[in-house]
Amino acid sequence: MENFLENMIFRSRWVLAPMYLGLVGGLFILLIKFVQEFSHIVIHILDTTERDAVLSLLALVDITLVANLLIMVIFSGYENFVSKIDVDDHVDKPEWMGKVDYSGLKLKLIGSIVAISAIDLLKAFMHISTPGVEHLNNMQMAWMVGIHITLIVSGVLFALMDRIAEPKGGH
Image 1 (cartoon, helix red, strand yellow):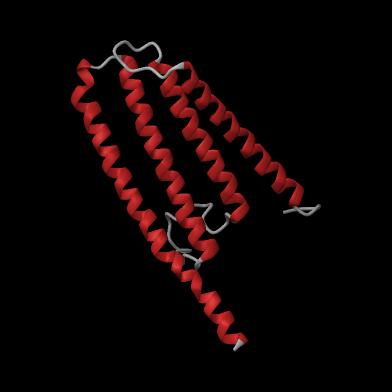
Image 2 (cartoon, rainbow, N blue to C red):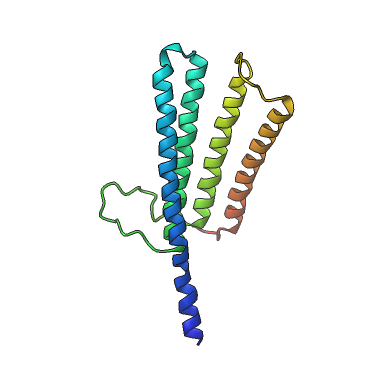
C-alpha cells in the first residue's frame, strides 16, 4: 500500500505538464500583442513624436521581458518539478537550461519582475510631460515607486536568504 501511494504521489507531478503547456500558449498570446504593437509603431512612425516612439519601444521591451520570464518558468519549472527536457545534443540549447535550480529560478524571476517594474515606472514618468495623455496622479506614482522599491528589497532579501542557507564551502 505504501509503495502504491508513493508511486501515485510521484506520478502526480505530471498534473503540472498541462499548466506548462498553458504557459506556452501564453507565449503565443504575447507574440500576438508584440506583433500588434510593432505594427502600430511601423504604421504611425512618420507622425509619431520621438517620446511616443520610445514609449512604444519600451512596450515591446516589456512584452519581451514577460516572454523571457515565461520561458524561464516553463523550462526551469518543468525540469525541476516534472521531468528533464532531453535536448542535450541540440546546438541551440540555452546554456542555463538544466542548471537552474528552484533557488536560481526564484532569483531570476524576481530580477525579471524588477526589470519589468522599472520599465513600467519609466513609461509612467515619460508620460508626465506628454500633452494630451492621461497622467497618473501623485498617489498613483507613489504607489508605483513604492511597489518597485518593495520588489527590489524582496529580491535582495531572497538573495540574502539563499546565501545564508547555502552551506559553507561552496554551492
